[in-house]
Image (tube, rainbow, N blue to C red; front, side, top):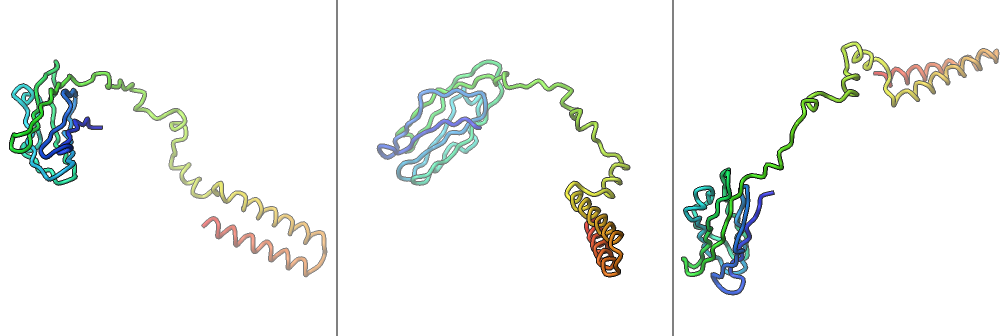
Length: 193
């Protein structure tokens, strides 16, 4: 998240500027110009010391509409040692201004993360289940986990129909068993297509 230097404008009276006395950062930041009153032109300027390591990414003269907030990005260079300068925020053509002592610090080295070469290899479980062309072919032919219960029930129905047709010597039962076997076969064909 980008650090923010909050500047309050026109809170008490026209062209009033409220800002913290100091601000420190090691990365680019933004100057948030929060206007509480009438529309106003704001001039944001870095002194020589600060402009050596920081760049105000605007022409310096920013128009802030009534009751709105404008953001002025400030780019920051990498520094080996802290650099301190002032950032001036002025309104009313310089009649009201506030200076903020800005310190640009070296980038935080503690954020670096050492990456071990083992992170470039997949975990053991993924390496052992790599698919080969043969396993992909078998997977496309064999039923999935969702259709295994249907397959099992179909085979049970065929077994029961065959047992009943064998036990009862009747042409009507034989036709009924044939219908059951035919229905199971058709449903299995539909499932595996």
